[in-house]
Length: 199
Image (tube, rainbow, N blue to C red; front, side):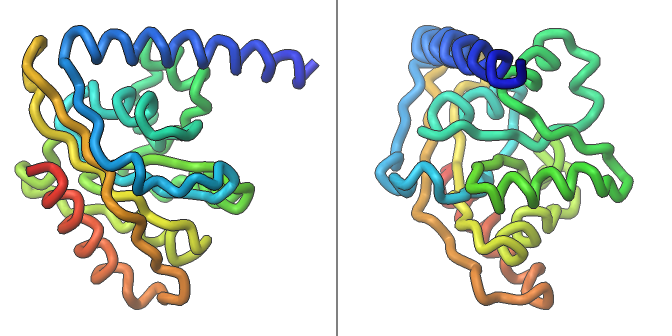
């Protein structure tokens, strides 16, 4: 029964991904740059890290990342029927904000160790850096703990419909061999790359 459910979910995933891609192409004339930087081995775990400006950012990464990407998202998004639907289709990992969510942590670590790809926004919220929010160390932690490479992502433009949007994928960042003592330094380096790509 689970195999049948997964089969139909994959079909729905393809349909939804295609529809979202068409939407971005028409409404935002999206330009995708740097996908050659994404490792071709689909079984290699990756951590996509981007800047967060609008609700369009997560689905944009989902349809251009060349992988099945599981997004880490705040629990509150489940209240929105459409976003909740996307969470089911794309196997979203929900995190309870302002608390140590052990279940989300375990799910993410297991996904990476199984060769899956995840995506998250180090800012933690939309325009987090502009708001003075402290950048979260989650990406650095998962990279050090699992050895998964980090793919920095910069998104620019598209603040309004029919205004061109660009998404750039940077070269993989490898932090295998680093320790938890380096999390601050790694987080700073990841955000620096993201900001450069978002210019």
